[in-house]
Image 1 (spheres, helix red, strand yellow):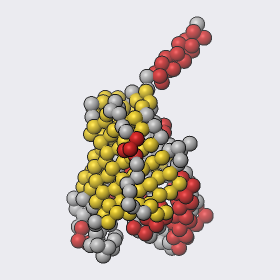
Image 2 (spheres, helix red, strand yellow):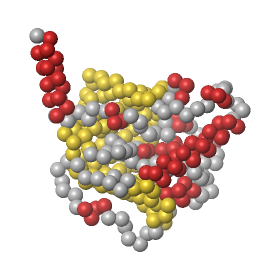
Image 3 (cartoon, one colour):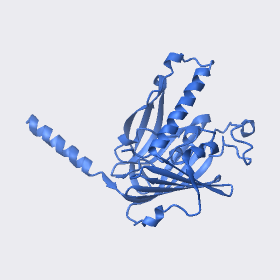
Image 4 (cartoon, one colour):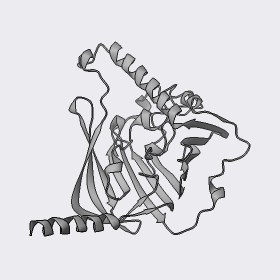
Length: 292
């Protein structure tokens, strides 16, 4: 009898996993809203990029940003539009190359990097931050404790549900443990019936070049999610709250290959040069994708 029960349990588990379909083609519209604290006095915020064309880089992501993501096999393209300008992220998961086209203040710039190059840039940023922490005499953390700790993530599902863009979604908590046991908790809404090939999430700071490392707002551990994340809410730096929700998703419409062609007439420079546009080395970042 015990063997029969175990066999049935295995069969039911396999059937449940089989119901989660993975799509290799999709068009997704997403809206991100960054909400600043009501009591914040914008006039009192100094620095943060003022003087660079009159733009305050500390508040420029406040408000709504709109994303349109195209997925076809190993290719992903995301168009991003906000008050600060437009940008497009091209991702080739076969070649492991990310190309970013930025349109800002009437100028167009292109940047590209392989996964290896991005990893090297991240290592350099980590080294810079480690040196800054060593010089931080006001920190209460002992120097011997200042070591990089990879975050760990756990997901707690609830019974609460709602429809997002026509799909039934389940509410869950994404709990990330960081340095010295600090935990961050974000609310995510998961469509349990499908996943997207090569795409863990759409929209948000993770999809915006240079913004994630400056302002926070990148989710980790999404490869553990049982389904696709259709929305999430999380806290950011400087008291801000970010809400990201899919507004429309089409899993049937055919996408032509030319949709992923890079625009002509734009010089594509090394990605490291883009760092100068976003805080002199604190930039970087791309759509959250699984890495083979």
